[in-house]
Amino acid sequence: MASQVGFISVDTCCGGDVPHPICQTPGDTVARSPLHYDLAWLNVVCGAFGHRPYVLVVRDGDRVAGVLPLVLVKSLLFGRFLVSLPYVNSAGVIADDDAVATALIDRAVQLADELNVRHLELRHEREYKHPALAHQLTTKVHMRLELPATADALWTQFKAKVRNQIRKGQQQDFTVAWGGLDVLDDFYDVFARNMRDLGTPVFGRRLFRNILTEFGDRAEMCVVRNGRQPIAAGLLVHGGRMTEVPSASSLRQYNRTNANMLLYWNLLQRAIERGQAVFDFGRSSIDGNTYRFKKQWGAKPADAVWQYYVRKGDFEQMRRESGNFDRLIGLWRHLPVALTRLIGPMIVRGIP
Image (tube, rainbow, N blue to C red):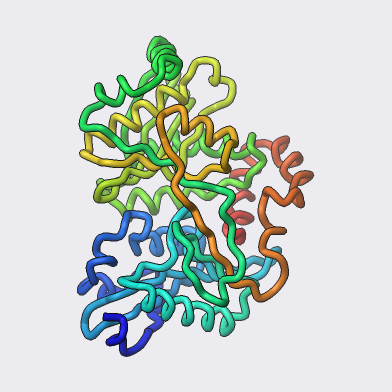
């Protein structure tokens, strides 16, 4: 019970190694947490970006009743931030009850003060009531699709337009390949070009290598090729019952061929083959282009509640939607892809 919690400890992960005792005696809530709460993500993001990780733990005797993974993000351009977690759409508090959650947030707020960060960011899927978390963002939602038992059953759920678009992709002379590190270069070629076209600094290749290595057979990549050229690619990470697609891209010049529809149909089939119950398409702004793309597959919105303890400045001014970076985004879209692959990772590692 929460009343029996004796203390909160802060375990610092050295060299990207998550403390094993956290996972040895988890309570029911911690043990049943979805994949995006897996502490392996700390190894992934801290190993890729060089950030310092922290894990706040509430113990009830020998049993873990709550966990809050955090990462200290330091940037010469933007300052210091405490985030749970960079790159991951959902993270934040994992707790048996609200009392445990409050204890974790109390300690996270204290740690934010100790580290003198601009703000603490907790990427929750529901609101946690806490006086320090006075700000929140709810403008994006998770788009998730409940999966039937077979791909044939899913096919019958699609509207005629979606089925026709998939068929058009299948009628092209494209090939579809699955792999891991052996297809990472093809995946990254597509991903980096697409990020440049969107005006967004690209993550480094090391991030995706870490995901494939850390999650083993739970992570894989799908690549659609036109001859030898990769034209669409996606990363899948499989949890206990949910498959997530953290990153997927396609080349714009192939939009008319529906290569992207072919990619996602293969991603969905793969999740069903793995016996998964839910497919998570990722976060999208309500009624935005990606929201509508995901909705056509039958995905439905689920809450995304990012909560903030703000110590300095305005956390919304750093977001792309603020308009503060429109000129830089426009300039980025005209840079050579090779240059964006060189400098993009150095920039994006410091963006919370």
